[in-house]
Length: 109
Image 1 (cartoon, helix red, strand yellow):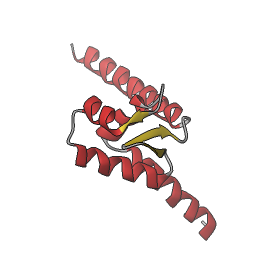
Image 2 (tube, one colour; image 1 turned 30 degrees about the horizontal axis):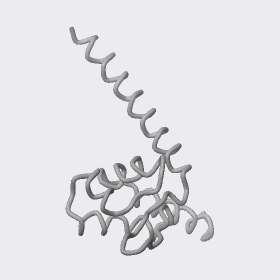
Image 3 (cartoon, rainbow, N blue to C red; image 1 turned 135 degrees about the horizontal axis):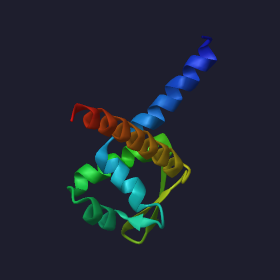
Image 4 (tube, helix red, strand yellow; image 1 turned 180 degrees about the vertical axis):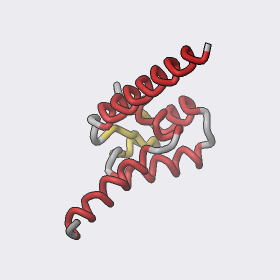
């Protein structure tokens, strides 16, 4: 594999890693329909503000989110709403895996 291809895989991996946490997944799904202030995101995910801020910062750095100041509030938006399609694909994989597991369980009975 050439170095450009290797670099592209590394960059893709960074983005996938940036969504690979339950709190980050919850934040992404919460932002699907509209932008939200950090205070509402904290309430939605039920985690400490400092913890949520750390997750938001990571996703900002990865290019998944954007933010803007509105007075004293920080408002977050999905920069790339297509990430939700990827998460839908993940759900499809999970459903197929569960169906396969169920078929195996049925054969045991």
